[in-house]
Image (cartoon, rainbow, N blue to C red; front, top):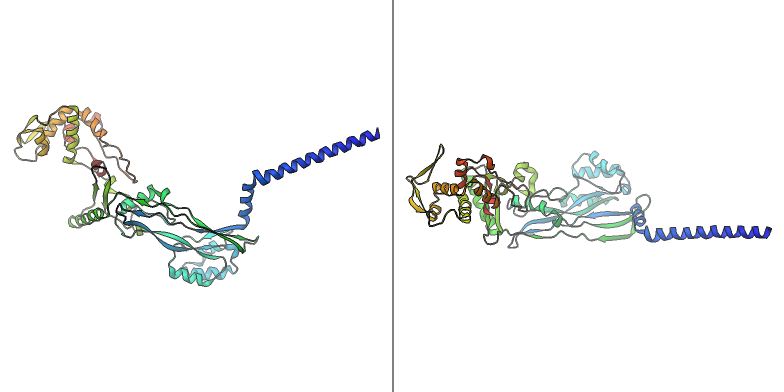
Length: 417
């Protein structure tokens, strides 16, 4: 009996040992295989540090390969608080060089963090200032590369290109629309530190930054400069509040040039108001298109087969619609003419007749089908929709005036597209 009891206990102990051994093996397997990446990252975060190296933003080119948005290499100040020995002296010396209050630097030096980017005092430093800081040769004080957006032509294409903020993020225009593509991936100088945060120089690695993608526009440089020159002359000659222009290639719809005045210099966007830098009048401002809108009425009438270009119309110089008298630009009118001549002569009474034959439902159906009253979807922020009459508010007079481009409001981009 005694022998059997001993054997039973031995078996139990062996089973417990085997069970514990299996648990240990499973735990080790889980740590080494399944949970390895997570634990490794946590361990590295305790003693590895990264000095960030900013990537260059992608350049923007015109269709003829002229650079309109480039980068300048600058440096910025980064502090590793745990590595700074004489914090008071370092703070005073850096504050003196940057010409700021010492408290602004103390906020970074005495902060409980692994790495501190001195913002905004230490961003985009001149090489003269950077050389003075570098000459101090203080532990824990680093100068890292940063790219600053630079527009070599200042005002040219400003509302189209937009601008970027202090952290090189797109804030308007194409810079905002294609920010994901233009923004690269930052690199770093990776190093390791001990438990006190002191840098270990035995193991360092360099991760090269990946620059953003370049973008080529449909804009032609020479056409753009011509547009901006003429708009500038118009603004000065007529003391205008605003002016805008778009050049488009009719066969493809490519925008060859676009400008909006007043303009701004995106290199110094902070010197302008929000309205000046964000209102691209070529896609935002609305106006009555007038006679340029008559082609919409004509195309609609031909499609609905309510007129033929050979049909005749007599223009006596004006036409009465309810209590309104709508005049032709030519005193006495054009007399007997075909509808083709109505178009050639830009005759308002003739287009009133076309609009009446169409009727308001058909005319406004085609106006909307041509894209008026809605955004075109151009890849720029801030586009307007224009203004159209509600159909239930269109009477005989509104139908007549809309037929020749008055009483509707469009954007320049709607009109050219």
